[in-house]
Length: 228
Image (cartoon, rainbow, N blue to C red; front, side, top):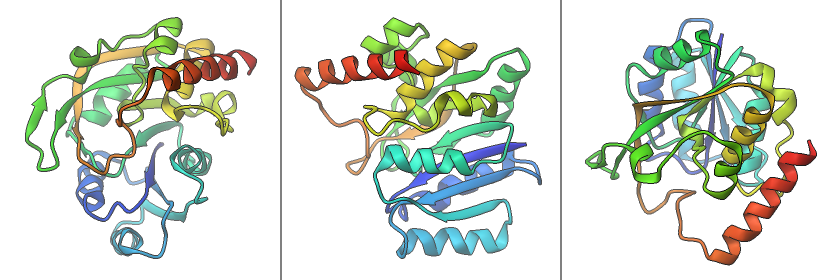
């Protein structure tokens, strides 16, 4: 069984398109867990309407404590053997689930795939996120320069005891999950783009940071990863 953990926050502009790109790739027993950190608005209306049409969608009111705790909440609610992390504003390409499942069948505990970077209207900005950022595995390498991007990640549910709860002081949920997986299992990077990674002015991540911020985050992610 596959679970998709989708953390939403005012996602009404793109979430229906995203869900429509996911659902055709799932089996009847699979699920999409949408944790909405701003319930009561248009995002809830859209997801609940779609959930009435497709019982694989589960709508949850999020904890209202930011993106990291929202993903933590969604992952906890997932019932599947394989968990795909998902943002509200991307588009899954048709072969995403199949390619990731192939990686699991080859022995991976966590898989990271490439992405085509696009603008808000899905016009291509870069054919490979991996090439643009030098993405690859390696514990210390990913402490210094993170390659773990949640929207491009899936992992076995057997990692949940190692991952959860995600510490509130973790700089990024996806980096923390990826580094824990490097300690506890096998990580595979597949250089094939499997989503359209949408960049727009309202992205939760991707904003500029200072050198001081980066140094502080590196110290904290290393401390958290080594203590668990």
